[in-house]
Length: 527
Image 1 (cartoon, rainbow, N blue to C red):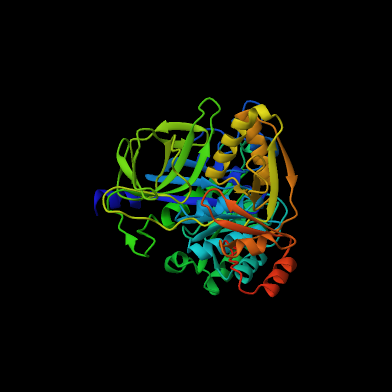
Image 2 (image 1 turned 90 degrees about the vertical axis):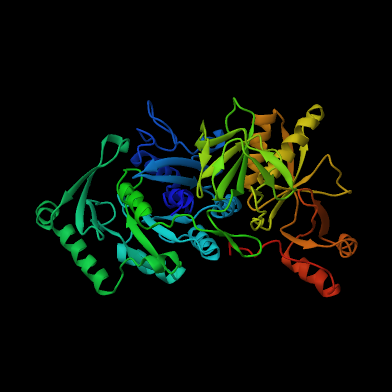
């Protein structure tokens, strides 16, 4: 193997995804704790004298106790470099999750032991299927009352089509969690919670005789269920897993740090390392080719003391060296990488080199947008990351006209980051752009960040539209004359969007004008 291939083989780049409130931020923190990247874990809101959640850095996230941006965490474990990308914890930010999934090789899906497959969970499974991303399932909160383990496996297979193959199996029902049977190592592991769950849980390996003596009937029942799993062939198959036909399953409780170490071990042992990534023509770019990278997220003002803008780039091939001059595929212009950083939540460190699978933060990358490609040597461009079709539309105007410049700058920045889409029309003018979003909470983020980062208060008014379709210059004048329809220009790319009050109105317009051009923005992966 070449040096680059050897380094790539050590990388594990993955996302943590789930339905809201399933424990993503807690799991992210627990993984960092078990990898010794942090020494003490805290709850989402933190506790006195304890470190808060590393990946939730925005004030609004801390106040609401959810993740509304994605954060990249980099740490080492068992000689491997982990690039863990935490994702938004609310369905309104599913577009940001979709962008993150364009940059990973594997996903860890959390299920709530009491709730099982929830709507957002199923949608995310479908996104992973669409992108051919292998999924490891972690059934979380097993230290609380929940459903039967076998029942949850049946639901996973029935609703996703993925065959569940448990790697660990719980000893004790939900709420009475003693430990797990590690089916790979063929041993029992008992967990003992540390005070407050702030440090790693104590793990004690038990022989079958010790487990029977100390745990009793719960051990006997778990052993019988493991025998049943073996009989029906529910064993891990690496090829089926990588082909997105099966999902390895682990049980635990992130808040108590139960089973988290076993998940990290599974990531090392079975999660795929970076592979050649197809370009826009479908031709894979070999890992050993000169550097290439995909921008999957842009975020400004992560640190209030540094008013800068970071573009998160997934290294796809070659070796990244800080200071190298790359080519920006979208413009053909050179791009210098003097300020390159690895990011651990809100903390930063200068990074001098990186390899396929790594995530590099490029500072003050004002020219970059999500979906852009950077490369060295032989030109390459990776497929763009499509935008979701927005379903909510609000006008925005500045409350104090003396802050108009800051308002325009802030709106432009939010658009460049992909927080919202910005639409304009001659009728409404530039003073009151229309903001378009997948979910209404995205507008809360805009208001919060404009107030906090640009000292600008805005007034927002809801528009009575619910459907957006791409149109063209020939159809636009006809559409603009229709009742319940308005045509806008999306400022980021100049696309013409026709907005309709509802599907009934759109069908009526098409019935009267069948030759109009109306195309969906993106096949709706949320349905």
